[in-house]
Image (cartoon, rainbow, N blue to C red; front, side):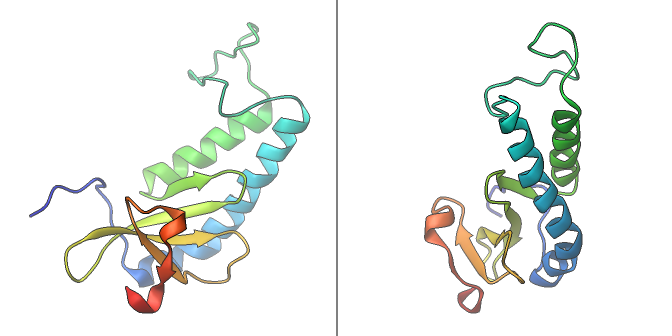
Length: 131
């Protein structure tokens, strides 16, 4: 058996069942990132060490704490957050041929309609009909 990058893999049906929750949380992530940016925070440049903030007072803004909690929750469920700007989410999946790929969903899409090889990324998205 080939070495897998991910411990959890979703069937298409399992990933689709997650969408109601994923949609709400992805929407919240995009909103939180925008609010943090409006405050002058760059969420990618600020390191997160369990609440020891970069401003020296030991606290992150509440929006950052919430954002981190949501991302950690996705991670614990085996769901990958690929873009906070677009609400881009990937679900690890094993194709019938044994290949590990991602089922790809983006905020604004009403269903999982695409997948891509891990090495191809978003630019390599293909129709779910070709899975």
